[in-house]
Image: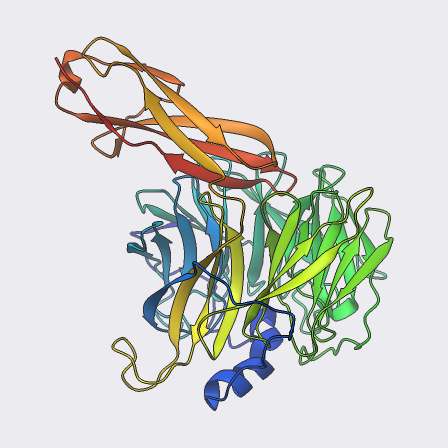
Length: 474
């Protein structure tokens, strides 16, 4: 284990492996960013989005940025340009928490994916440093070494068992880490062997991972065109998925990428090379949803109600899939982004009901990038569903009275856990985690608020909301 104040992690070398994420986007990056050419135009049926907002974060780093909702009501993201985990408020205020890295390692930690954990903290992967990281809402960072050198953790998600689960981009195993930092590796079976080894071929190495049906984690194995399932006991099975473009063992043409679970319980996976979203039941029955040629989706996430949202880096757009129901077919809509030459990396749903995205834009010389260097940008577009989660403090607001924290939910997701936290003058009050709070004389003049964090099935994503504070009177 390594904390934010400790130094080098022993046994981790200077790695040069290009993660699969970079391979997935390499062709689009060359066309859209390196040469400054326009991205592929959206389809004729696409309509411009209204109400879009974007935030310029300065020069972009080496890909791999992820964005997710956190339990504090903000959006959290990885930033390889400054080797930090960032948090952005709904109003666009940004704060960074630096991540320590191996001193001799020139490529940074390799901050790729992150997720909200069941402990109220954010968890992330450090690809190049071979670590799993935890950052608290106040920015305290702890790093845990993966017990297999150069295994390169990439995807990470919460499991129904209260632990975090992650993939290894360079080894045939799925990892599990408890909220106390205990790491266990489970092998992805290789013909003729049950051992866990670092592999250069990637034929049985995991990439994206999500919670899903049958109380299991589901993950992709791009180099073998397989969808994997791992139970809470660590048992792994796989289901093949057919693509038009065959996978290549050198990683130059990965055919499948990210996956998530839809409201109907099916698994939905991006097919980058084919520009297709495939929906697969837990028994392996597949339905395909073709996208405009060259869209190249790489990441897909749960949206409000029964929708899924994904990036289209080859089309300067996002995509929305309405998940099919018993009497309704699945439909796909392309949503063009307002900024030209934009390369979206990741999408996520925020508590405000917006679809947030992060990526790089090459828009010429700007204040933050005067040398025409691509900039890292976070944006949001309205989903049409309004605010999904809100919090309100009710009560008289006088000393000795009882305040109540009420949540408001407008979405149709299934809540499986709700947590409450009281705050005084924007600071967390330790031990105050009930729905009510009795004020005291010491609170007079203070601003008392509460925070609600809800975990939703089937993906175990979290949304958070903080109530407007009440000033306590005598």
